[in-house]
Length: 150
Image (cartoon, rainbow, N blue to C red; front, side, top):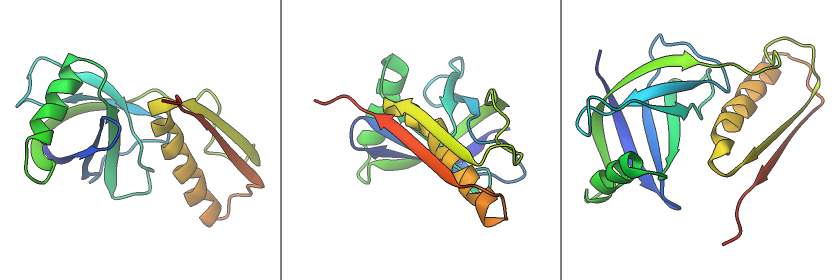
């Protein structure tokens, strides 16, 4: 089924994609395959989910790295608001963390990422925050993020 998503151009050649979660379920750190039929019905690309599973809106942050993402960026960038609604198809969620972060085994968590790899960590951080609000005992969560100095 085709869904409607909002695509917004952000600084540093990044595209933010948002769409209503509805009844779709996923966990922090997972990814999905995305197709934008108006760009190409035959191309499906994997992207990490950056929103928390507790949020009503699913978010993806896509770095422009190749021809397909460049074409998508250019299509959105041409719009006057630098944002547009497009039909999407998605398949997933896929993957899972190698450590079960949903139980109360760990009270200290360190997340390490680089560049656009922050997106699954953002999802996990927000998921841990929601678990903490519901009573999960967390003593410390640390996020280490490296980016290139330009």
